[in-house]
Image (cartoon, rainbow, N blue to C red; front, top):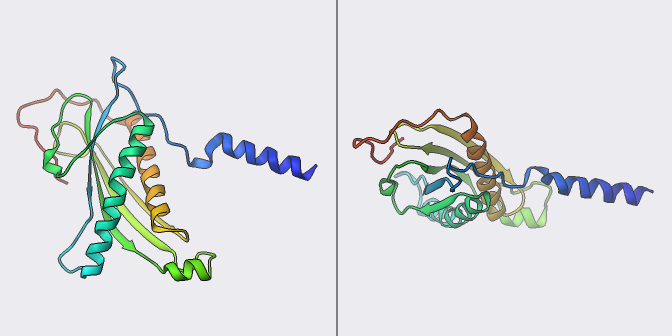
Length: 187
């Protein structure tokens, strides 16, 4: 009896996804996908050590393709930008700027040897969704820690970011008609 209850609970949790499923992206009125142009800013500052700069580079290099993958799973058309200024606004096109604002690598040895949250790594990100204007249509923040790996932490932040942005589309104001003065967004 107890075993069947555990199996039923596990199946029920799997069915609702425990918050780990990607939400479906909105579609354009004609049924086509919304396009998200992605730029990940590692948030490197002049006062950072060489090791900190390297860690931010490693994080952003892992985050870029993973975010593109999660956005694609949600149903967005995607474009990875080399520079924020490469964004070209247009109907159904949005810029998602993700900035890493803090990172603590924790201790991989403590995570392995001690477990139970010891040596946890942590990451903070800010993200901004732009449409055709200079001001963000939506912004959010993720602040997460993990006793697992930094890769698992980035994957969780990416999923939560995409789900939050997707949920925000329901409350966004209508976009104004494009104009010639609209250019790349700068927060």
